[in-house]
Length: 416
Ligand SMILES: Nc1ncnc2c1ncn2[C@@H]1O[C@H](COP(=O)(O)OP(=O)(O)OP(=O)(O)O)[C@@H](O)[C@H]1O
Ligand SMILES: Nc1ccn([C@H]2C[C@H](O)[C@@H](COP(=O)(O)O)O2)c(=O)n1
Image 1 (spheres, rainbow, N blue to C red):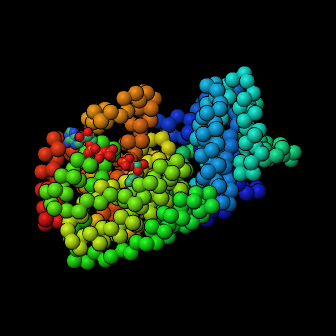
Image 2 (image 1 turned 135 degrees about the vertical axis):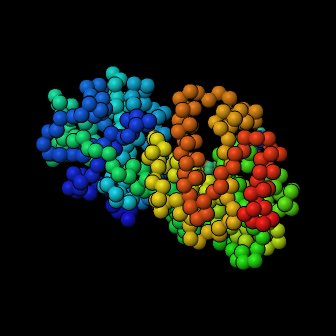
């Protein structure tokens, strides 16, 4: 599967390229052809006569190396390039072909310096980076391939050919087992592959190995509370623990707290595998505790999947995997709760609660807008997850009213 996410000799012409030129719109799609093609208006805006144009893509047979190189390049581009350089997320893929995406960046340098070229020259030394440069020629634009070490002498010019939108946004093609894991084994394998570079992985795997899931037959109900930050999960779960005489658990579980910061700084592949394994440890705790009392869980698989999907999918809510996508299906080997409640509050109220808590006081406008897109995608992904789906709870009223509303739901659905 991973083998396909590489540029193969002679394969370039069957690939589509996508550049996230404007996050609120469709990406700009193009293919390559040997004969000149007139650019469309939108493509002219990207390839127009303003500066030097490059793209670079990260490819490697080793997925850990690929993920880390991509993250390092992203950081380098954003910290080194001048304000006159635009950097857009870019990808190349084979339409409808899972795991065919080669991720990268498109760089438009309008500066008079040679900084971008110097940086790209350094990056070109890496065998995992494949680079293209673009040149305008009248109404046409062509792309040329560069080798990791020096310009390819026999490199053929390929003309940019505007293409229509893909049926599935490219960022949805690589989600399975890169961002969201559908079995413990798949997440486990990722951490096994990083034990050399992240020694903490061994300790996490040991904790997973030590858990023995206990069957939940004849057990008390398990109720999961989900929602974005500051929607009131902690407040509600504490109140439910009291009122139901329940056990309160969290995912990730407490035994992973000391590792969380370390894995949060890793690229999505590693970070998401860590959270996925956290759910399996929590599942083992649920299995045990639910034999004694009702169990309330603060975040579980809905959070893991919704945040992972929303982060992996760039741009608009429309880019999310379709409603009926298998990507929203609960993993077959993960203990299912009896009830999942999703707390929602309007954005203004959520911001007020965050501010009251002393966070997010100086968020800039651009960030707010990006956050807004992200928040919409997380909420929508939460709502699309199936088996079990979540029930939406309006968490805007007072804590007491939210508690009463949830108690009624639990009585009706779980007979508690
Ligand atoms: N129903 C409510 N009405 C008004 N304020 C609330 C309500 N519920 C919680 N709050 C307040 O909003 C803030 C966030 O609540 P809480 O910590 O429970 O959210 P959370 O979902 O657990 O957040 P996080 O995921 O970031 O930990 C707190 O200051 C809390 O006192
Ligand atoms: N079961 C879980 C719990 C949390 N996460 C991730 C998703 C977010 O990035 C972040 C939110 O957690 P919080 O800051 O509210 O503690 O953690 C997850 O993937 N799976």
